[in-house]
Image 1 (cartoon, one colour):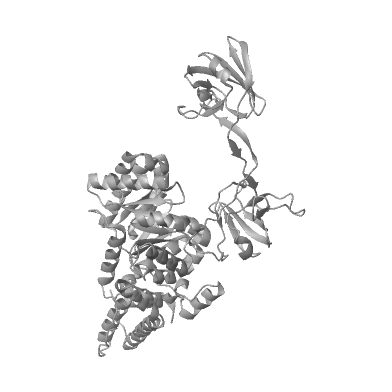
Image 2: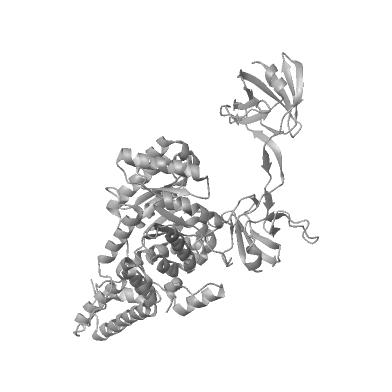
Length: 629
């Protein structure tokens, strides 16, 4: 039962609420130019975002508890209509205090905020199918370019948005994927859309040149160690390409040996460990033969082989050139690693014995500083920068798991506290944008860290005659999260725009222990800006790859009902994953109700025009019109 409040308590509440209203109006005034710069459809959204940020500059938890004790709204679901929520409570408390009702300030009224968000989501991502309010986005693998049936199955199973990642494949594959989707839409009466993600600048490890030209095959064994399924190896000629059935390994051999082989022969090879392995020929074709072997092996290029028939050696030769398999660097806690500008950066005498690897962005060497953290391979390896020079960075490994970790080529590098000073668009992205503008419904931008990145994308699309093309901004770094309010205000200069929560890189950048609260904050801010959210990274990943979901990822997928779209990544069982997610979202739709949030103070809400201008000046950028006073 609500507890009656004393007159003094009511007056105190009213004063606090009016102070909140004043804070909202002051923030609106400070960023008046940002509201004016927004497109006409989004000006109320920028206004509401500013009101919400003003609320979240305060710790309101005690106020919420006192309001709830009186049976009043505790402001816990105020995102889409922030000032209206405050004004409504003020009106009730003024009535309790027997005061004259104060004049309401212009703002986004109740129900209007959620209606604006729904309209924005529909405009960007398309309308939702019957029975669920959350769309399903699916990332395409290369196989989608060659299989209309796969794409049709995905559309039929519930895919609402096809995602094409410009970091992979080429324009010819992209075009075939999109053509398949358009055809499926026509045949099925669907309205699936396509988003193309620009790759952005990728900070990755360079090649690892250590390794061997080798093939390996394994043998399946039972609980007693006996071979229960022999390995299958294809023997091919030196110039054979294609036409070989699925096998565990392929060995090129001299043409004379291949032509001499008959079913029942034995091919004897000495592997890299000097162990003899015997392969039994079970099938002969025109350009290859299939053998079985009941022992595992590592076979190197040029290994000696013999062809035996009825126990007698009838031919001898060498294995041909095999593919190169890199040997990753092995790192343990306490080790030191040298990151170099290029592959051929000379080794200094002092660091000659340390493991070396290059990286893909030379800007790192002019911006990184000693003492800053650095992460490799999705956070599996954590380091601390100890030395920085023009051509190399010395890193101390501070965490690599109990038994150490391997670091290979093309693995991601994260520098959460380093401002790399580079934009989100590369020359490749600008080239790819020509294709995106012509073929896609939505342009996705990776590596968004500042509002200038958004303005550059908008200008590039306008130059291609696509001023109204929808955009999705991928938040995957600490800097992108810290600058999120300004990024949103820049995006709302045009319509429509959405936010993708890239939880993989974000977890590495801000720390796994903070991911849950940060992803929730992004959902709040996006709802305040009436911007649709795409819930991404590892959703039902085990199901998509293996066909069986884990319990944790089913719960995670259900959490996606708080967003406007959930993204699945590619996998062998992706069609089953789409059907499963469609079913989960349908069921959650009947049960889900966003719960009251406790409004503690948010660091990301501490925004000001002066502070943003100082940051822009420090990184050498121009003062953004989006936040100009």
